[in-house]
Image (cartoon, rainbow, N blue to C red):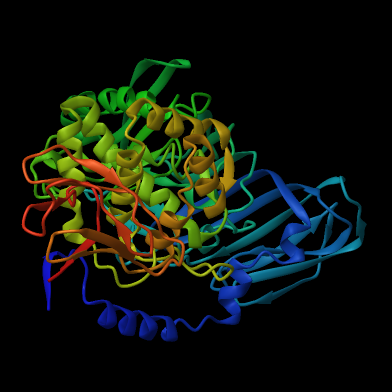
Length: 552
C-alpha cells in the first residue's frame, strides 16, 4: 500500500494520456511554417530601420500607408520574404524608383530584386498597402485593432498583436529573432485626436486635410509586436525618476476625464516599481526612449516604452488577487507585470514564439520580487505559493518551434514557481540577484532561446540546472519524490520524473526541526537524517512544487 502525503499534480497516467491527445491535435499548416520558420528567404537580410507611416480612418475602420525597410544583406540573394496578413492589400513594392514583382502565399509575401544583392550590402525598399485590418474581439488576448469609443463618444483605438503577429496591421519581417535597430512611427489620425506610440515624440504635422500626423522615434531595438498605435482624446503629464542610469523620463497619456485619478495612482505605483526592478534586474533598459503608460480600453500589454494600461486605476488584477493571499491587492497588477516585461520580453526577447515562457515566467516572478522588495521575502514567497492554484499541468511551457506556436498558459504561474525553486536551491539571495541582473546585462537588447537561459543560470550559479529546467519547461508533469521506509525506519528516496537525469535537490526535515537539503536522483538514495520516520517526515512543499509519495 501507498500513503499520499502531498501530491500537487494530477494522476500521471491521466495527464500523459490527455497530453498526448492535445499533442496529436497540434497539426501545423503551411501558413504556420511560413510565419514561424526561419528560411533562407528570411535569414538572408537583417533589418536595420523601419519608417512606418500609416493613416487611420476610425469611422471606416480602414488603414492605408507604407513601411520603409532598410536592411543589410547577410548573404548573397535576389529574393526575400516579408509578412503582411492577406486581408490587407499590397498596392506596390518600390525599390530604387521601380516597382518590384511580388507573390503572396497566405500571410507571407515574396519579392524578387532585379539583381543579386551582395553580402554586407545595405539597401531598402518600401511597401505600400491598405485595407480593413483585423478587429480584435477580445484584446489583448486576440490580436488586431481595438476600435472603441470613450465615455464622451470620441474614438479610442489601440493595437495589440502579441502572438498573432505585427503583420496583422503593418508589413514587416515578422519573426521575433530579428529586432529592428531603430524606427520612426508616423501615425496620422483625424485632427483633434492624438496618437501615442513607442519611443520619443518627434512632433506632429497638420496635413491640411483634416488629419494630423504624429511622429515617434524608437532609438533602441524593438520586437515587432511591441510596436503600437494608441489613438484617443489624450492628455499628457510627466515626471522623472532618478535611477541607476541617470534621470529617466516618465510620460503618462490618459483620457482627459481621468487625469486627476491617473496622477495619484501612477505616483503610487510607478516609482516603487522602478526602484524594486532596478534593484533586482539592473537599470531600466530603455532610458533613451523613456518610460510611458498609455491608457487603453483593453486591459494592458507590454508595448516597449509605451505600456498599454487599462486596469481602471485600481490595485490587483481588475480588483482581484489571483494568489488568494492578499499581497496581490497592494499594487496595480498591470503596471507591475507589464513593466516587468521591459526587462524580460523587451530587453531580452525570445527568438522563437515557442520560448515565450522566458518572457512570461520571469515577469510573473517579477511580481513576487516586487512584493519581496517592499513587504519582505516571506510575503513574496506566499504570493508565489498562492499562484499555484492556477496551474493545470496539461501541456509543456515551451511550444513547438518554427511554427509560431506558444506553449501552455502555465508559463506564467508555473514558470514563476520554477524560478523561485532555483532561488531556494541556491540559498544565496545576493547571488541570485546578481544572476538576474546578469541576464539583463549579458543579453541586453538581444534575442535568446531556451539554451541561453539555462546555460547562463547554470554557469553563473556553478550548478547544473539543465535537468530541472527540462522537467518543468518541456514536460507537463511535475516530479514526485518517492520515499521508502523499512520496519526499522531506514529511509531511501528517489525522483519519479520524465527527465532521465533529473536530480533536483530538495529540503526535508523532522517535524519541528530545521530543513536540510538532500540530493535525490532517479535511483534510490539513502537518507542520512537520524530520527527520521515516515510519521515525522516533512518535505518543503511550500518552496518546492513537487508531489510526494511515502510507501508503507
